[in-house]
Image (cartoon, rainbow, N blue to C red; front, side, top):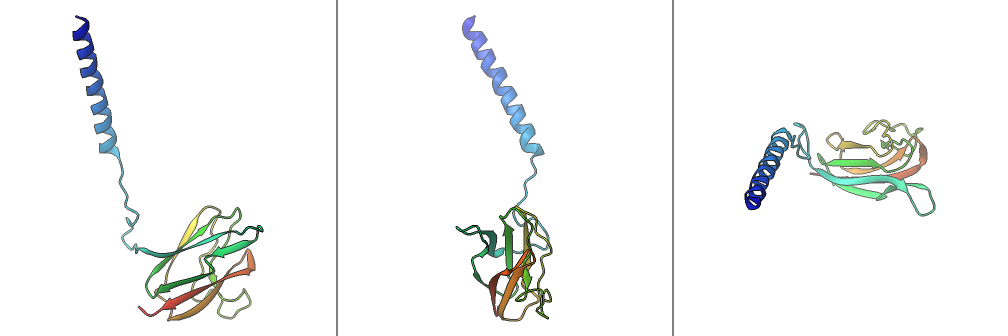
Length: 140
């Protein structure tokens, strides 16, 4: 009888496990990284972070993509930042090509280079306009 109880217990446990697994799988929402209808694949990532001395930096300092490619800008800092074309806020072209708006700490923004001609673009953050990087856009 002891053997039958063990077998019955295993059958019940197996049935419960199978039911729970089936329920979880049927209710799972699977999203691919590109689930957005207008989504494009990310060609490069720029991270806003701190260097060894604690200074805010864009990493990498120079990023190269082609026209119509997309960049992910990740803010790994503890304060909000932005990703704006131009040498600084006084540059007459500042924000005319790209302006992410404020990127909260640990959040990100994307820029699709579909409105820029091939060339080199300096960018900065409004939190500290002395923090700059360079985006090189090549012809597609």
